[in-house]
Image 1 (cartoon, helix red, strand yellow):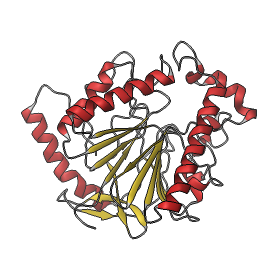
Image 2: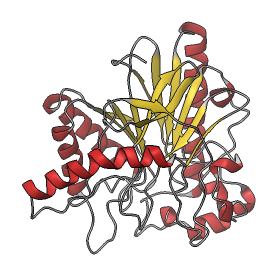
Image 3: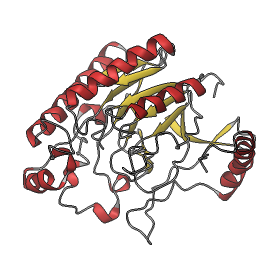
Length: 341
């Protein structure tokens, strides 16, 4: 693979607004290894100025990277969806002026990475099943007026899902017809699949499952072989597998609640479309590794372990990262340091 090929870093659900008593916006350290970083929602709350300080810090320190931001369902908490979108659009404009346009907000937006690759991004929301509607409306904070999304109803949620779904299908159809050479990446917050490899086993029979994932298998945006990569968040369950029917790579890399770190997960174009790559011991070159199902920790069903990687890969990764961590600690002894392992 060319040294100039885009390298996509996938992450979501950092939930830096938690814990409420001591949010992590200033303490959390994200290791940026991708030229294109896809932040797939639930990073923090748009009402928190600290969220935008966190993003400015990323843009300042990772000058060689472009950041793509998808709205999650948590970003609009304690405000309206339209206000949350407006605030992220305003920050996108600020970043265009101050950071050379390296922050891109994707809310039913298309971005052409180069002549061969296009990103389509939106929240997607979900198609809540009628038989689950009462429990979803009762149990999910999204629908609580005080702490959730203001002026938000189950009908609003499903309507926004329909708009996102229609937009994705129309965009994929247009690209197939007018630019068939393009490889399409779809980036959403909500999950587009009920594939067991993408669902936490403990939650497969959940009575609110349709608030997290929708079966898109019959939609053009899923079935099209032009779509080579679909990345998402929201479920707090990590996965990396190839859909057999279309050949697309399906990936989620989420921090969730209660975990101190998030894996540095990188994806590059290859002969199959896209594949996950991992740093070698020199931390500069990358190697493909086997795509496997994410497995939950049997000791704690709500905690998800990382994607399987060989012992050699893990050992090789740690040497340069220990060096970087030591350098940071010795140069800035009073600063809290979080490193990705």
